[in-house]
Length: 492
Image (cartoon, rainbow, N blue to C red):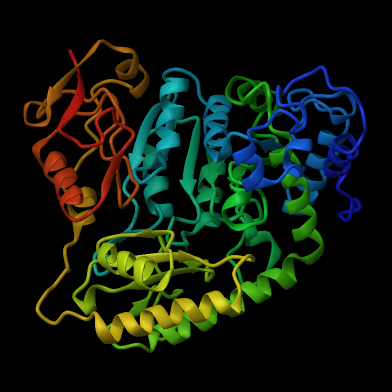
């Protein structure tokens, strides 16, 4: 057992930040002495004193032998991994590295259709061929859950030459599928299970939270420590266990994807966040779960409102795509108030200073974490209390199931691999003229944050209608060159 009270990287950074010396190395602001005054006024000088480069005793992220190596070993033990890598380019580079390390050009990978856009980027970088599975779809709430073990088994029977399976656990809504069963099926084919666990870094630290991906049998998982724990934005980790993945390939892939000038502030925040959770994680998560439960109970009692609840509660049975829920993730259904999630989100933000993680057509979703307070929950509940009382509309309905067509009508019409299409010659056309052409870019609408089109995929009228519907209801489009969606890039 390692001493989890230690913070080797944080300590080394502090020592170097406070050591009097003449600096003739990067960065150019020289520990804040040359920083812009308005920026110094906002952030203070201390953060810039710690903005250092690869000095001798600060180690090297790409060939760690000192304090970074020690910090990563501590993190591996704390999160239940055999090896851990610190990430300064977010979980995005971790997902990309995972696929680069397991799949080459032309190799098949089985994965959900509701993956993050970083996974599509990984397909472009690696040249891997996706075998997409539709996730389980909740037609009542219009929410996509997890892929099911049955779907994975069927896909592997049809594609026994697949090199890996990737899944999302938990989803953005906090929903967890039957990962243990998926891992067992995947391992029957002696291939690795990769997990996008960006929103589940806290699972290791409390028994009332869903089973962590590694404990459920995953071979590799990527976690955004900044999303739900105490690291700074962009700071994430990649963990592996077992012998199905070559750690050297992970390291080499990360050398391609991470900055050669990594922020030691971000790295040290990972070291500090790990120590905080290793020493106090259960207590912090107990407090967080109590706050979340208070919000869940009080909001669900308000007229016209309901919350996404864990399976097997109140007589509700689970399903293969929804076996557990992260109870710190709060999704409130507002459609019975006659409001869209977008309208409710705007009212809560502008009138009550309550800012959600994201709205969708029928829902508003909130992340409750170790940084929230009882006053935050009171403000949230009060906002919804007033919303239900004063803003309810009885003359409107918003039961518009935008995802239903996506998962029941749209197929995966890949005519070229994402990599081939990305590098092929393209042209930009008005949206109306792109039907039946091959897409040359990623088109990712929010909500629901699922790429509707990717390079190499056939553009169809239903897809265009779907994208325009999301725009009309207040969503936005990302990933593509023209986010107003007046034009799209297509292959020539």
